Length: 319
Image (tube, rainbow, N blue to C red; front, top):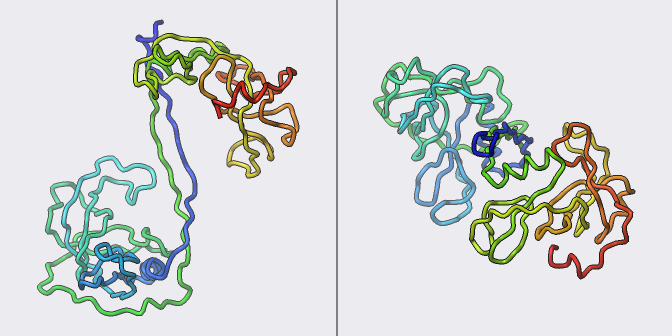
């Protein structure tokens, strides 16, 4: 089968816990959600921002004038979500809405529980549906729901000192990105060559550099690359780092070394793990060769090849 007849696709997931500390304004806002008290902050011009920020977006002045706003509001715009994804507020179809809470001058993004898009409109009145268990996070608002009746008067924001018992001082949010990667012509050829235990780059017709992995075009000259060149398999460690923190779901004991390796014939260093040598003996100029695991589609790691170290002048341009 030729390259043009098959499109490579790979589902990928990037996931990590995002941890951040909170200043006094964000701490008060999230603690207020835990206590079912929605808070905003007043700017120098008198506008009430919800969610609150710590600095005035117009003047950059520090903001500390907290106010309590209503738990009802008005939809300013919306979009229907027919297929909720993992981690979204509701499991059944819902509307993403921007809601201007009564007393606020800006809108808060959240989900609206509605039976269908025909039940949603700009200008509709909604109220907060609080989560049964609240811990000081935006998810303490389970969602919005349609309000039973219109309000005749605008809710006036009330001053609030922001003081709560056991305030929330930090949050941990699970960040996750699911996507499907489809390589282009150049990287498709590179990946297929790796499956054959060969490393193939592409040479720029202008500057003659061989790029590994290939990109389909030279980033320096801006011209297309089509000439394939096999490089390696051996190479030289140009620089490296010692990893002391064990990654989740990675069956590699720390410490270990991750290095930039200039394969013989390549004009660009790629990265790989160094093994088969104590981590404190890895050095710039170390000559290495790939080690393939059984059935592996790419080198598992690189190990010393037994050759003398490369002279610095032979790889200094690849640092």
